[in-house]
Image (tube, rainbow, N blue to C red; front, top):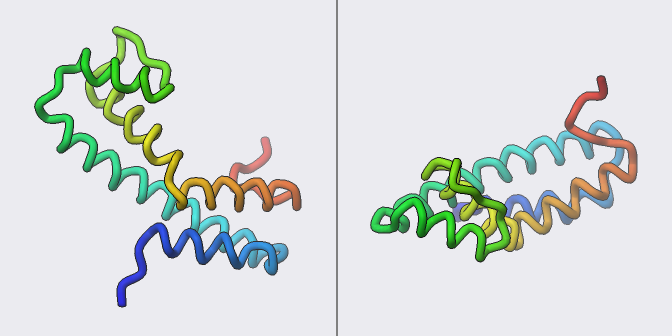
Length: 114
């Protein structure tokens, strides 16, 4: 049986509350990679679906989805904004955000301090 990106992120998020320190960092790091992979997979899917749409139509759809878009943006940026709007509503993205917030409350973040 193959585990999907979504299922793995959900599994990692479920394991997070029982994890501490370095174990939590490792879970968060894996989930972050899967988060990026999921978004990129969705971006490719949105790009395929948007083949017949003009850049203006894509920007309009992005704005309707609640993503700020302006006339200076390129087609690829509009596609990414649409994918991001859709991704943020997925169970995987919501679980990852909750996991990252949990880790942050415990002082763990993947972005190094300056």
